[in-house]
Image (cartoon, rainbow, N blue to C red; front, side):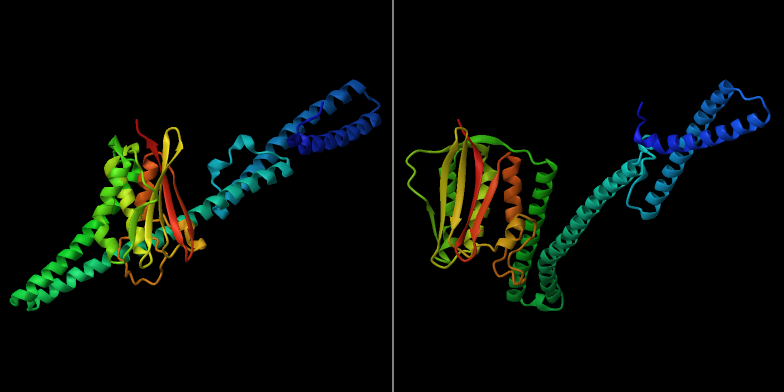
Length: 345
């Protein structure tokens, strides 16, 4: 019978001790002229079993306590991760188990470091976004309190500017609240059947003046003769398409085009594409464009305004519908954002 590897050390050592002791006992009995093979064999078996169990228990206990102490010292592994039944005297297996634990914990630590860096960046971004309108409001109010309030014309203008700062703060807070609800599953979607073409045309009409500032054309990729019905939360999808179009206008070229196309990709799905010929996105920025407050332009000029939350909200709303969003872009040529929706009945 072949013993498990974890018992090899104890069995080999017990065999050596028992053999040595039995030989010594045999020599002792020989000199006493009272040799008995049966007694000698029983002595060997009893001694072997006794030493085997003592050694196995002591070695396992010793290894467990030492490993437990290592866990505490390095503070990488948790005691609960190393249950006593799994302790083995097979050093090869033991080394492999410890290495596995270390690798798992290293991965967890790396993940925590990434999250911590993201948290720091996020806090820095939100601080920047909030302090600008806060300082603006504060400066206008302090100027009024310092005496400018007496001038009716100045008072009215400064209050108007302060009001715009408050509106921006409210806007950022509302968008953060929406993201929190989307991430926590607290936002209830009111799904209904509606004509997506009609919704897009309404958005075109609303953004016509904004597009005219850069002479950007808002167009469909072709003429749609029949309505296309989707099933989704109309208000949220309007927000998605509006954010994508506003984003294309923000980074679009003068005299450019923002084009929307709709394709039926499956029997029960459609794909909405928003394409522009604007600045495009660098390859290294692509993985992070849907992060909250992440900006491709690091200059900090904020010349185009915005909260930096638009694309993050877009992604969360689309995923709340159990759908997918995609992005393709070439720097200097343009970008295409597309997302799927359930086809209506």
